[in-house]
Image (cartoon, rainbow, N blue to C red; front, top):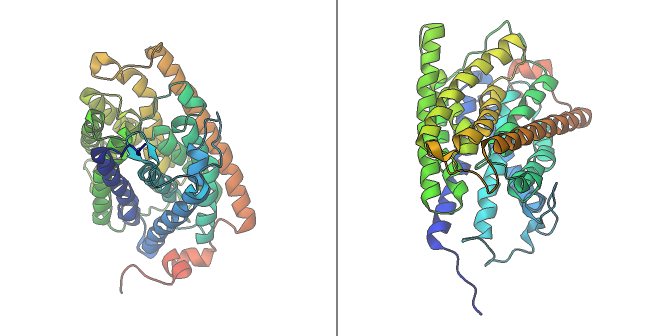
Length: 407
């Protein structure tokens, strides 16, 4: 009997979506973050993103994918797919080749630890970035991906996380604030301001993130179908709404709207819609964009000004808070009454909200605890913080021997 071929349309879409998701990290996130730091640390941020992309890709092949997507254990996957040794060229998941699914999920495994980079820029050792990111992928990301997408205990409870509000944004956001605290603040924080050295570069990076997010959310349908189209639509609506709302909030509070502000709002809207993108309709996208912008805008001030935590590029306030908010609101906005897809058999709004709340609490707790342990171990093994002289010289020169700009 011959092997049933994969669907060519679905496969083509997932291959395209995979490229879009990798494009979000390289060069999108790298440029977005690089524009927000001082000149002397521009290349170090880009280096972190590139090195993480390389390391996570190898670890994903070696064992990460297997831990996330092999077997049906409640807590963690098995070892049956290490190095894809048991996955043949013609192996399929649904209508697409498993190789395409591996690559699509691998692009998610790249960007998630790269998001955390924004919390510790301008003062962390390069060796610490690699050690932390590698351990974090295996101990935080892979288990949570298995819980939600790999048939684990949260999937069995019908949790709604279409494209990573919990798996990507909550894990990265919570771990980011832990990393910021354990690495310590930048010198002079919070008295001295460290304004972005190139808002234009940040805008270019944000634009790439926006485009790439079409693959991030739309590709999570795993097919070229109506669900993918609607996920893309609501993603765009949420981003656009959030950008406008953030600009308005800046105008009301500071008397002007900034470039960095409006693109930060766009990213907040993208993070907030992510878990709900396959479950809500256009009105839900509009609501999530507006709500995400207001709540994340408030969180930025709270973290930096009230809590005095130097989460330098607002990873927790934007990605963490946005992802968590979307993960909770999807329970309401998935209602068919406002264009959503409804709920699993036997579930209603109340049941779904309890499930989302439980899942969110579990992901927050595990991400925080595991990150504390990993960072403690990294501090003992290679150290976390660069020396005062290295920080003063800038990580571009002191760690990498290069400068972003010729002077």
